[in-house]
View 1 (cartoon, rainbow, N blue to C red):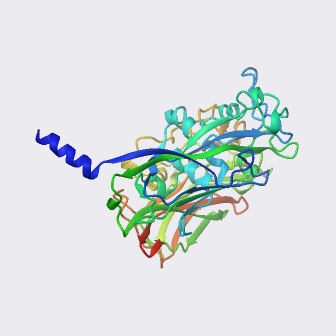
View 2: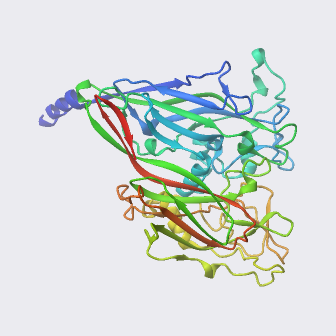
View 3: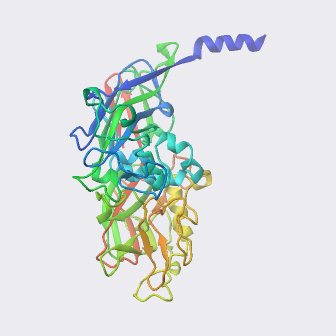
Length: 496
């Protein structure tokens, strides 16, 4: 009986109810289709200032994806499910539909900037690979991100149920067998939204509404394949985008505070070019509470290239004599410094011993691809998610090419059929499926609260490798840091 009375009292004073919502874009086009090539590369959503709390863990960006060849037809990615597999035009298999969004910006209704993530596809590529296994890529990631982990399967997704895409129905809309696409219900991997908190949207003790603005990637970044560049270049369409989620509604508005602070994690992205055998990258981030930092890379010539997957995360690569990026350039050491002082590690992460020259190499500085630099990988994975809490990850002997003199069709080789040349042998080894990066975590205990102040200090990352000074690799660096939204009757402000 006592339990029953307690329950009733709790229900009256504290209980809350939930409400599902679906929000369309405020800049909706006539056919609700968005495309970089068609001149509408921005999608804007507005969650109004209401006396409700947003359950950030429930928020999903839902839309359909359609890839078209330059003439508007469906790519012939083995549509009949028979014969030789083709990859005329497809999107990245390691981050799926996330590769279509170049930048994500979150602001309050009053215009206070909460978080802006540039180079979003490169961020998602590393985060998904570091926190999801091959099993995840064959199950839940296909529904959430439309990512399959295998480029031939991804190519099939890009022309599911496809017919002649040049045949249009009433009003210029593809119908019936011509309406080929696949759909996703995608979480946005913004620091502000990933913690799973309930965010008060009210003008009373809240952020006063939330604007979510998406900028699409250029088609030449998103789409690649053997014939993607033909007939003026392929393009990708985002169809019927909506935001879905859940509001949490207090029974009594008096439960909403008048003032307060929301502390959250946020991503900041910077870009550099790595081409020397010994390069130091200095960043004046202006961040007061940096939790971790990581970088991934890709040859500069692969970025915005219809012939390459711009979201790939390969090892550092250098050119062979013919000018093709087919030779490894192993990282031999990594060092992290704050104002010239070792931090967070007081030592150099040394991988030089794993950069053995192939014994039968006919060209100097051609390196074996059979070693696995586990220490670098450990720090890299730990920078994205504390390693002691990691239960799912993709990196393994297949993705990192721990093979010896044999050709293989790994489950995770999302750049087909580009091979890797091991000079002096007959072997070709798939290389573009690597889960590669470097990084460090300042929050050594992995609590999410530890950080280091870089506001008035320079962060430096020194990388030594087997690059030759002529093979430019783009280096995408991401800093996870703490920020705060402060709200009061006077308004909303953001501090980092």
